[in-house]
Length: 293
Length: 333
Image (tube, rainbow over all chains, first blue to last red; front, side, top):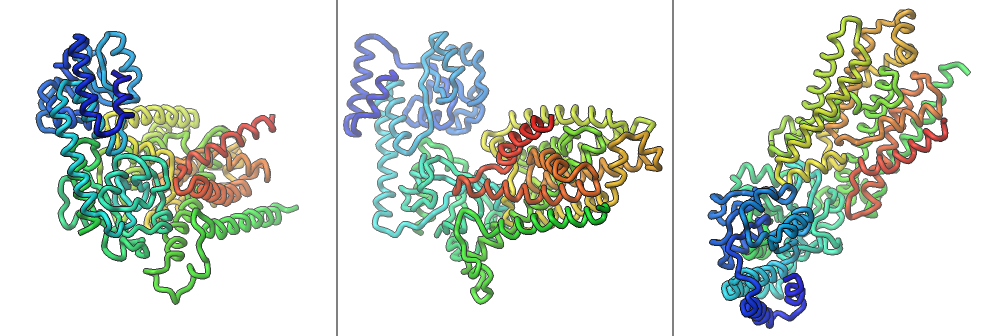
């Protein structure tokens, strides 16, 4: 399967559904693999993808951090990225385990007991769509996966088209900071799904040149590369007026920054913004509305 | 040369050096700024980028670095004399582990309280440092004859290990993003971008320095031994208490401002001793001055070397301090 996935990522967009179909056809014809019926996902973003492509009913356990979609909240949990409960995972007799790229020990153990796994790592927006298709092929949900992938692509493309030709505000996308101060600012840099979401939504990333998914920057960098808009992601589901003011207030010290001067420090709430799953379409939409009101 | 003249000469030299570093540091950074524009009052503040970079981003950082560096270096000198152990650091007696545990709890429990503009993390870490100091002190003071420096040392080391275990536990059960933020805090950082936390830490550091100011003679005698000091009229019990509590206070305030920045409290005192001898009348103030300039220079490296990215300042002090200290060890033996 690993070989198959490599081919999928190398082949052009148009042919992917066809290729995925072919792979499944070959698999079925040779009797090599029944589609998995007991899936364990250790990656919350992939859990969301599994449900989006119709493989949800076969998910039997998830990681400790899984909360979406609501169905997973009643499922048993088997540890997480750093502490997967290998014993429990094996005991549940899964026929597919979704692992994260860095879980080498777990993968070795799974190989030893001959439990197949699907290895995943976070990437850009394209990677989410590719993962949907690859998982569709792997779980025997090719059509539904193709549909989900296409609707995600369509939603993102629609935003792209809407903002095409509009001036692209220089934007700083902040996803972490010490509360009540400007210390330890973590922002999205020139790579990864948050960066892709910002660009798709019609913004220019002020940290474009940093080839990392995230950057820890000082107040001086914010002043020296003044953004037109500061978007701050906040995990809270809702913020009232007073709390919102508390979140935005520390930025007011940097009054020479256009975003601050023009009142364009925008807080986007909701925990879904930082999960590279099907909900990124909503995220792109939210960012686009913030950038191009 | 009389001690007074030597004191004036050596400290004058250190003071001039430190003043020069503190004046120079805010003029350099990851961005080139025009000082003329930064100090031009005719340009309105809202549109003066140079002034904001100078006064909001850099100056607070330099001042925080100076305060933390001076406090940690001086606390190191005092504790090395008190414990009669050249390997003692401001973090040996559990103060920083207590502070770290406080900060860790504030980060992972997402506490967002504040007091007079001071945010939750520095408040919690200062509370943690006071708790650790209180525990160690109570244990060491329960001995009848003065503070037992052995008990002090053992209690401190044990408390360090115990708090570290608690820190790991809290980190382990925390959310991924929070654990990462907490780990980042442990690496130290001086990008305060505001004067409020500096003003908040200042009175505690000044209080400790007030105690340090009357201490050098006593420290000279204590570093020979408690009995010898007692024979020369030192109130050993009181002196030990004041030394321990003031050094802990300085450390707690410094850690709550800049995180547990390592190596300052051990490298600076030893380097200064190498330069000026062992007399605490000179070593203590000279270490404070040199600690200030050393940390400011390390932070300058932290904010410029990999710009636009930051290097945690604790990593810089360790990278410079570690090899340097080893060189010092080899050279002296």
